[in-house]
Length: 461
Image (cartoon, rainbow, N blue to C red; front, side, top):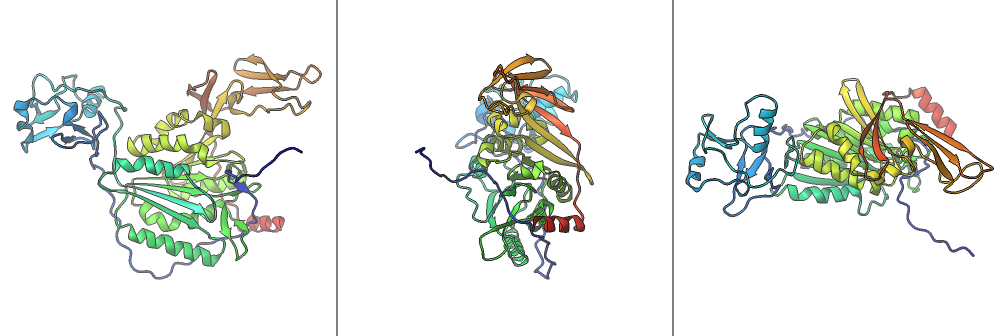
């Protein structure tokens, strides 16, 4: 007998009948506190040069032009001038601003002096820096208030999730507070449960008295394999999952948090669910419309049929470091983010959706390509579908088009792969002959009308 066993599943797909969900009619509630928008200039807690803090006799000097700081350990401050720089009329300019102003032609090339009184250098001929920059000139080491929200489908096991790892990575960057993690298991399978979730989330929002400059929301759930509808919980007492249109689900899940989202400078949505959400044209159109409606800075989703969120750990950690800590534009650094995640690329494509105007958005698909495993981001079958030979392919040509032929002399099944339209090649990957490509897709936002939604329900039943 062949030995076998069972283990728990890590993928986020399945099947569930669709239900229609609507936001409850608002009822009278106590007046909410005003949410103040954070001041944009909140100085960093760590030195931009050594990326460390300052204790004892060391000090952090705050740049007068940006939120960065530099520590006294990374600069050779003459002992004779130690008291001089404490004067009220002395200002400090960090090395990043000094170089940036020179590069952009705002000032001529001059020695870096750091401290200035009435635009004149305090130290002459220059201020020595005894370290090297370890981050980009555009980077910060930001400790601006950050709220992390994880919304998890009821009874969905997320032990040691990539979101938890990202939160653990971020926490040390906030030594004086300003970092909060909220985790909610949601079950919104019927109208009463929707009201219960909204009440619970609103209470949390009410308790979060601080304002938040950045908000990151992750939603971890299953999706229906055919329709792409996210699971929403149980409709009744029987523990059988039901699903709903993605735009309805996001309306319900996100609406209690919008008082905070609307006051934030940046907001991000991560959708840890299986690829039917993207692969089904109707659900993908609904998702795009929801992205426009909710005004999130960026939304990240995946299209693997049996997506496993743990594989996105490196991508999420890169996002935490480059976007949340170094405060770089997600659109600018996304190629670097996926560049650190080539194994994720063997599992799934990554989609970045960003609103660009009141009623439009950009949709970019990032695919990992390997000349042997995923030519131009397409999957080469592990087995020839005609003759059944495994590992059967040999490359016939490798130019702009990849051509593969079955090794079986009596079969000769052939595949031809070409570079996708509107794609650009990103940086080389860790494997020879591998890289990521970015493909600009034509947006197709839209929500099906009520008749179409009703027909879908009838068809399913």
